[in-house]
Every structure is written in C-alpha cells, then in structure tokens.
Length: 552
Image (tube, rainbow, N blue to C red; front, side, top):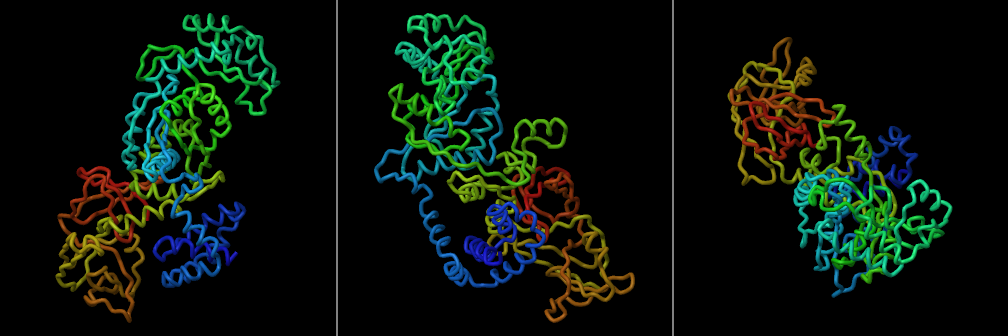
C-alpha cells in the first residue's frame, strides 16, 4: 500500500509543479479499490507522511523517482498527453467533422462539458469542422429557455462551433426518408398497442402488421396525420429475434400532440431519437463522434439507418461517464430538492451544472483540463471534489488577486502599538499589478476564533505588521520586526478603518460566513483569494459584498 501511495503521490507531484495533493491520492486509491474507502482514516496518516516527503523533493528528483518505480505510468502519461485521440488512428489529411448534439431539455452539466470539449478539440486538432446540433425532435421535452442557456454555457467553456443546426428544421428530410423506406418495404405502419409490442419484442415474435404490403403501408402513412397519439407508429422492419433488442423492429416515427418550442403546432408526427440522430450525422457528414457509453446499444441501429438511406456511416466511439462523489446528478431529484428548498436552484454550489460551477468560481480552463484528464475509456470512475479542485486552484493561485477578510471580527486594542503603514502586493508574483496600502495604530479586528484562543504570554504576530503578547486582560505591543527565533503565531487581521467593507460568504453547505474585507475594487464575477481563508467569487456588490466560496 505504501508503494502504491508513493507512486500516486509522485505522479500527482509531477503533474502539478512538484506539489502532491493528499485528496487526489485518496481519490486514486478509492478508484483503484472501492474497499479502500473503509480504510481512509487508517490511510490518511500514511498519505500525509509520504506526501510530505515527496513534496520536499526537487521536481527533477520526483520525475526520476516516478520513472524508477513506475516507468510504465510515466511513459503512458507522456504518450497520452501528446495525443489523447491517437486511438482513433486518424491519418494526416483525413477529413474530420465532429458534432455534439444536446437536447435542449436541461441545464448542461460537467458530463456535457466533457462530451462537447472532446468533440470540439478533436475537430480542432485535425483542422476539421465542429457542429453544434440541437436534437429537438421531442416537443414534450424541449424547452425554449435551454437553447439560450446551452449556447451561453458552451460559449463560456470556450467552445467555438463552425455551424449551428436545429434538427427540428429538417422535418421534411425525415419525412422523405421515411416514405422511401416504406416504398422499399423496409418500414411498416404498426397499430399494435405499446403493451402488446413490448411483449412480442421480449419473445422475439413479429406482429401481424409486420407482414402488411407496401401499398397498405403507404396508404396508412398518408392517413397517419389524422390519427390520435398511440393509434399507430412507423416501425423499421429489421429482425424481431435480433440479439440486440434495440434492433427488434424499432419505432422511427410517432404522433406527439404537443406544441414545439420553435415549430409551434406545425408538426404532429415526430421522428425518434435514433432515426433523426443517424440522419443528421449522415446529412451533415459527421465523420467521428465521441459520446457517452449509455448510447452503446443504439450504435448498431443508427449505423443500420445510415446504411439503408445511403449515408456514410459515422465512426462513433462510446466512452464511460465519470461521477463526482457526493454530487446529485438525477434531474428529477434535483428538481424535487429545488422545490423543497434543499437547493437554491440549478446553480446551487453543490451541483456540477455549468451554471453552478461558473457561479461558484470555477474557470473554464480548469473544467476543460479536469474532464480531459479523466480520459477516454469505457471504464466508469468516481472522482472527488478534491480531484477537480486541484485544476482550478492551480489557475486561481497563479492569477487571483489577494485580499484580507476577517470572519466574525472582534475589535482589539494593542497597547503601545506604533503607527504602521502596511503594504501588500495585490498578487505576490505580479508586483506590476500594484499594492494595497493599509495604515494601523492601536485598534485592529481579528476573528473571534483567534481572539478566544489568545493565551497568556504567547507571542503573536499580525501578519506583516507587528508583534504583541497577552498580559492579563490586556494586549501589549512587543515589536515590529518578525523574530524567527521566537516563532510568533501568525494571526490574520484588519486595521480598524471607516473604509472597511462588510462581506458575506456563502459556503457550499449554504452556511454564511460574515465579516469584514479591506477596501477594494473587486468586480462582480471576479474570483479573489482571501488570504488564510480561501478563494471566493464576488456574486453581488451592494451595501454588503456577497461572495460564493469557491474552495480553499
């Protein structure tokens, strides 16, 4: 186990500039063996010890150690980073057209982000074409607002489509293909009840409608528009004994009596997902598509439809979904929790919808880097928030402005404290961004937690300001300079000032931390780092600054 932990610690350190994250290693151990979840407490001390040792090594030494103990991991990692699409065996000069076809039915989440980014990046890598296609041919599911929401979210992720298509604009094409299949004896009108067909499909027995003549089916197709929902559907004639149940005379057209978000009541007869999906891929010349493994059983049917209609078959590759531990993914359950006020909405900070991640303070590049790191495979994986946060923290740490925030402030007086001008860089790595200047005398705010913990005789230091001790009921100035030998305990603080600003920070559990922030010009949607507290995104700037806690 120690060897395994060391391997993952080195891998993580090599990936993130020499700093391994204990949370990421825990995630790897659970992913490798779910039973390790029961041993987390036992393993944590071992992980902390090994991580400390690994993090003390120089980056080159970490790489060398990883190569020594797990050369196959290092080589595989380097190869994957060179080209994650190598398995597709696309040759130079090959035409590449990819597509991402969401249904405008819900708020897109991190799973959608992975699918759209992979297809977009595949096209981009091979100088191909990327199509964003709304699959909106089920009017009962399509909602008008989600067209706009998805476009905004995908654009925010950094995706740039070459063409935007709406499947519902191609209804005439779907009808003409349906009629062609009927005329060729490859499709038939079926008036059996859903219950009866379900039973026959299980038994692999064709219904009486299967044997109808072409003429009968053409006549019934022409009468289709006048029927009521459920009275008849159009089926593809394949094989009721096929080992893949999806291929047992599947429905390809049915009546849906519901107004469409874009088309209104213009149509009553709508194609099924498989039929329109296969045709749209074929019609627009999609050559490759990466999609979720849940559609794997439908691959054979869609290829059959393309072949029957004379389209070139799309190379479709199914990949496993990944789950984030503790995150609700069921749309039905999320809606119930929103209705019960357990969640504040689809942008609740505990969710992984694109809206929620954006509002919480995750960056598009961090999302892209994370979902791509989960790989392209058929193996399901469950990751933790810590695995995800690593990618965001790395970007924020390099770019977020720094400020002081004091939670639950208590006003203290340090007797004899001199007047001090405190200067802090807005960002320690970018002095050119400027500095924050605060002036202090004897009055300061520190957190109630720190105040309650003040001990007699202990030397404390207000960070980059001054040192003091507690003597009886008084706090007394000691010195200005930091004394390495005495090792004073560092406290976070704010000098008392009329310019201090009230702030509220909503945590993922919906609890609110209240306190004071130094004077600032933080803009709405900007993510900053409150030193010794964490990263936060400004959600609203009114009388009280309202932030969402991003992560530590």
